[in-house]
Amino acid sequence: MKNKLDKLMTRAFGKPLYRIAVIILGLPTFLAAFLAFLSIRGKEETAYQEDRKQARKAAEEDGSLTKIRENARSYLTNKYRHFGRNTESADFQKELEKQIQKDEEVEIAGRINRMYQQEGRKPRQTFVEFLCRSLNSPALLALSVITSFPMYILLLIFANPYSRYIFERLVMMIFVAFGVVFVVFTILHFASSDPAINVLGETATAEKIAAFNKVYGLDQPYLVQLFHNFKNLATFNLGNSYSGNEDVMAAILRKFPVTLEMSVYAFIIAVVISIPIGILTAVKPNTAFDYIFMFIALVGLSLPAFWFGMVMILTFSINSHVLPASYVEGNKLSLLMPAIVSGTHLAASLARNTRSALLEVLGQDYIVTARAKGLSNVRVIVKHALGNAMIPIVTVAGLQFGGTLGGSAIIEKVFNVKGIGSYVVDKQFLPDIPAILGGVVYVSIIISLVNLAVDLIYVYLDPRIKSRLKSQ
Image (cartoon, rainbow, N blue to C red; front, side):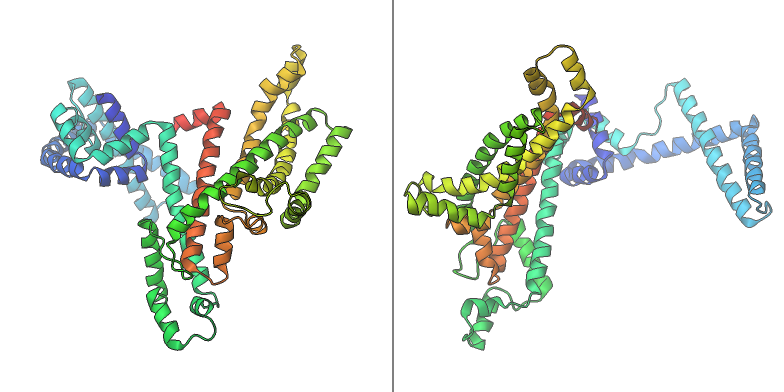
């Protein structure tokens, strides 16, 4: 326990941001330890200065310091002459004194360390060393845990490379959210459109416009409004929308399930279709099979979502009455067509990326060696090739899934899906600043979480990433 805590505290203090966080979260422990450290620091400093005097005196007596000065002057003289500079200048003297002081300090520090080793004494302890030694006492450790519990939670997170990586990404996500709010609010604030006129109408009187601006704080300066938006984000209160005066957080949480459900269906459709096609076209490149499916994938990428959605509605709703034409809450079949339209575009992109990633891996030397050993083609592809090709495939799949979770406004509009995408687009035309800010914060958080999940999948797919993560 003692060694683990010492190593953990030392490692955490080696990283500036963690050092600040540990001190803030463990402020009671650090204040008490620092006061105790100051009380013994004076005695240690006095003893250390006496040791320095003895070490300097011994170095003077045996001629070590004289030799250091001569060597420094000789080295610096040769250096100045080589570059054609004056050895009698003030710069030469200044640099010489600096070099002598540095070399003498190294010599004296070495003598003190050797003296401490011979006498079995401990050198001056740093504050971190003093803190860790103090926490070796069970009573003091228990008191520290009680008064500085958040600090130990942070140290536990820091101890595990995976939890540390997740924690750092979550902290980064917070800064991303605040940065997004700053950029989007600044753009909307200085836009020419007036939310009060758009909501109340062109015939609204000046008194009504002034009252509207006062209610929503639009009459306040830019910095004041920005501060209020930052405060709302920090307190998870995104405010009320200008149109309808509905709670933005509640509206987003209400619309999130349908967007999530549609995105999951679309992603499943895309993976089930694209991965097998990508593998088969990579195994049989430049064949009729490859050309046909890659042509279909290219067509899928080129199809406009709104046009494809209209065709689906015309074919399966109006003509054949198989599926509902628009989304109906509680009817799972009404999400099938928007999921197919969204999944088709995802599948086309993912199939092409799967093919290119697998083709690159199949050309590697270790694949040739595996085949030369007599392994079957299926075994070579499944066991050796596909695993190494998964990183670019997972990257593309994660980005696409994150984008779909962010809300596909066009598809949602075509099928009348009351999701996040259509919600943000509708509010954009006012502009309804609280609703838009809530939407973009949601999108930034969703994409950050999906990227975090993709990065964690990397760790399990590539042992090199896992070892590099553990070594940090």
